[in-house]
Image (tube, rainbow, N blue to C red; front, side, top):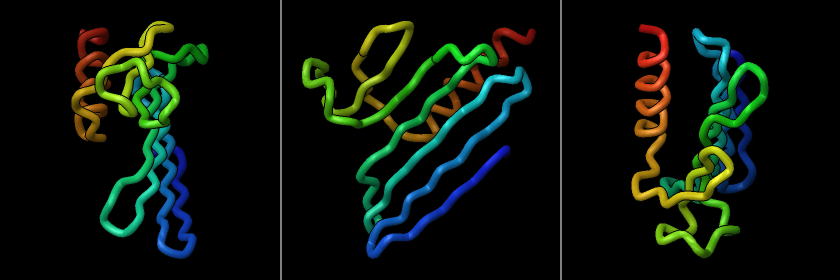
Length: 102
């Protein structure tokens, strides 16, 4: 883990984490919790050159996707995101990194 920030504001918990991975890519995680409810999130995986490899979030700016507000950013496209759990995101990143390092 390269960085971690946790802030509390009234009944909100804001988490930010930056991970530096073995291939020098980075993962940026942001979650906003109200009690036990995850109200906002963004998970972004960025190449060492700054190129976005994949990003998942629930910002409500893409009403055209079937899974609105949950969506993925992949190679300039906005795609549906039926499963939006942080564990699923990290598994996807790990699978793709392991596939490129074999």
